[in-house]
Image (tube, rainbow, N blue to C red; front, side):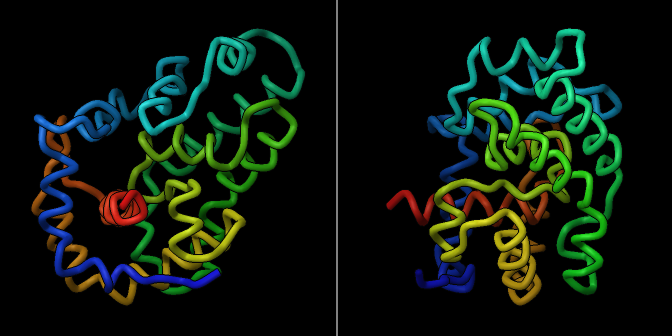
Length: 204
């Protein structure tokens, strides 16, 4: 598979962002990109919010996480909570000086991805879409469009491709992200901006 770059999307990036964030268009920005209580533990609503990014989580995939027990679903919930707590105040994805430091920081995310392998209908894609909303500066969204854009398959390869690409294009990505506020008044993360641009490009 061929790898693409965010540099290809620079000319139309502002227009693309305006389109995706417009309240009059049917994109997820004005619903999914509302953080909620940053100090709260993961809730069933947090999991269901990931459906706004084209997941199809139902009661079967959500309720077991929030029941008592020591089965795979409850272990996944514990891993998600740990990742959320550990990454809540993590530095921004693009500020890490090398990929090794980034991977060390997101160890709890990798652990949640591993725990998801034991739970039906849960994957690294699911984990990323649940946790990105609550830690948008450090957890990249991983889905088929991002994988296709970079020509990679595994979560760690997506993180590496994104990190290198964002670092190379940060001179224009950072100001563009800073120009857009989320629906609840936060500056858009560079990581979320990159995802929006890639998702929209791959949708064409």
